Length: 138
Image (tube, one colour):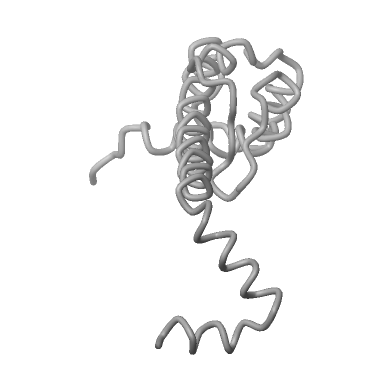
C-alpha cells in the first residue's frame, strides 16, 4: 500500500528512478560509502598537513616568529621558501580536501599553495606564538 502511494507521487520518471535504485542499491550505497570515507581521510590529511607545515616553519624560523604581527610574519614567509615538501610527506594518502570541500584534490605543491595561502599561515603562526607565550602575572 505504501509502495503504491509513493509511486503515485513519483510519476513516470520517478518510478523508473526508484526501480533502478532498488535494483542496484547495494552498488550505489557502496560507492557513496567509499566516497565519504575517501573524503573523511582527505579532510584528516588536510589537518595533518597543516600541523606539519606549521611545525616545519616554526623550526626554520624559531627566533623570528615571536612577538610579531601576522603581517610581519607574512612578509617574512614571502621572502623565505615555505617547506612544501614537508606537507607532501605528511601522509601517504594522495588526496587532500579542506573541511568545507566536498571534492578531494590530488595533493601536490600547487594544491597546497591554494589550500594554505601565506596570509592564512601567517595568521595561524601569529596566533600560535601568542598562545605559546608565557603570560605575566601581576
